[in-house]
Amino acid sequence: MILVTGGCGYIGSHTVVELCNAGYEEIVIVDDLRNASIDVLDRIKQIVPSVSLHFYQVDINDEEGLEKVFSTHNIETVVHFAGLKAVGESVREPLLYYQNNISGTLVLLKVMARHGCKEIIFSSSATVYGPKNPIPYLEEMDTSATNPYGWTKVMQEQILRDIAVADPEMRVALLRYFNPIGAHESGLIGENPNGIPNNLLPYICKVAVGKLEKLSVFGNDYDTPDGTGVRDYIHVVDLAIGHVKALQYIRKNAGVLTVNLGTGIGYSVLDIVKAYEKASGRTIPYVIVDRRPGDIACNYANAEKAKELLGWTAERNLDDMCRDSWRFTEKNL
Ligand code: NAD
Ligand code: UD1
Image 1 (cartoon, rainbow, N blue to C red):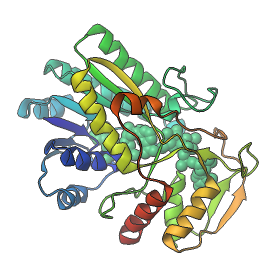
Image 2: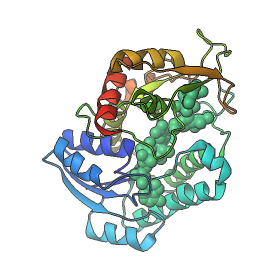
Image 3: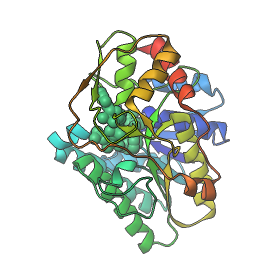
């Protein structure tokens, strides 16, 4: 059976749906609901009625709680999403991030080892390429970070590589996500962060429905075609399917798989604004402000390795991403 930690969250919920679509219909979810709502479980069931979900509201730092889950179910694979992800918050509260992301993962790995569970798929991030690598990013480049959130990803990757050296039977996938956006086409699950969003798309969504007045574009003097920052945005459903492919891969191959999950295409902030205006029929007012400290001009993936090893490429384009995001936004925000 598959355990999905953080399975009620944004990427986790979409991955549960795609696992079920691929025939993995019985799934255990562990989520302490610190950044998700219990309603997501019903919504997943509406999308994939054949799914059989076993839900535990447990913090992954709670060893006893996890022990009960592993004693109740025969967990073969863990898809590990549970973690905190806000860069600015991680700078203000580094201990919270090291505790939750690193210690939480150590507890999870300890319980997995006790139960002979040797397969783990981990949510890493393009942030591990740090500020200095040339683009497009290739998996063999050196990793580093510029903030505690990023360091937790660099360190968790290292811990997982070390474990795989110590135990050759381990099967580990380190999936480096680029910028996931969009929502399930049903409009039932998507991203709706609490408070004022930090990331571009969630912010634009709130402007589109009138909950925020205007977008601040962080700089238009970068060395990019229109001067605004360029990123590799990927539809969350494509990303979720990437996890299914990674699962199928590690079931055939022991050791560590490290792959980028991106499209290989970069879009600017203003490209995104235009595409969202087209999808929603709403105007997105914006102002140009100073650059955000820590931002780089441009990043995107070299997506060849995932294509070669997993037979996976992102299939949904920017219009699909904005259309699906808008459908979720209209229904839920
Ligand atoms: P999310 O916040 O929507 O999902 C994370 C889930 O984990 C939430 O449901 C939260 O309640 C749960 N959680 C957090 N700490 C927990 C704990 N200690 N015990 C149990 N549950 C806990 O975030 P997401 O966007 O779905 O991201 C999932 C993973 O992917 C994270 O590890 C994140 O760092 C990584 N990631 C996300 C992005 C992105 O842009 N969204 C990019 C790269 C990597
Ligand atoms: C951010 C994180 C990164 C994390 C990723 C996914 C930072 C510095 N980086 O990436 O570590 O893995 O989210 O969670 O926070 N923008 C605006 N106005 C806004 C918001 C964003 O102009 O209100 C611009 C940014 O300058 C950037 C682009 O939009 O050029 C995308 O920003 P964002 O969605 O925050 O993602 P990243 O910065 O790529």
